[in-house]
Length: 130
Image (cartoon, rainbow, N blue to C red; front, side, top):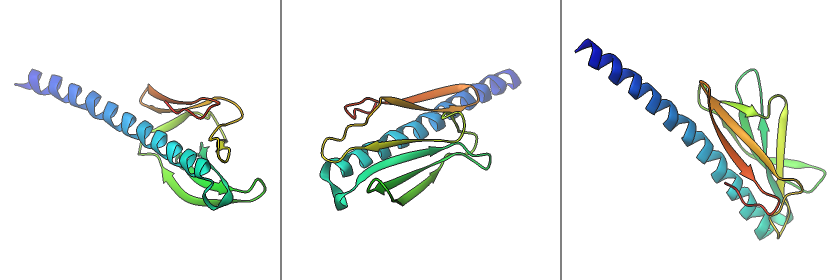
């Protein structure tokens, strides 16, 4: 019984870790798609974007609108406990979608990590998110 319980607990832990990591990655991709859609619709006449922040107090990301000079935060999402950004490595990284086209100037990625396992979200220059 003890052996089965130990094996089962290990399997469950790995499964739960993978679910948590994939959930965070899918949430980021969903929010990126939402900001792209707002830019393509020209909502409020602004560009829309996401700022990924690597912070000692806990990693998070911000969705925002910008006119090119000033930005307005629309939401702040903190990553789940144990989940951290592995890209950006430090500081922050922004993805800003252009109005109407939904494109970005340079293809980029962002990655989240949980206990050595990583999930990466890629944004192409044409705005495709995968």
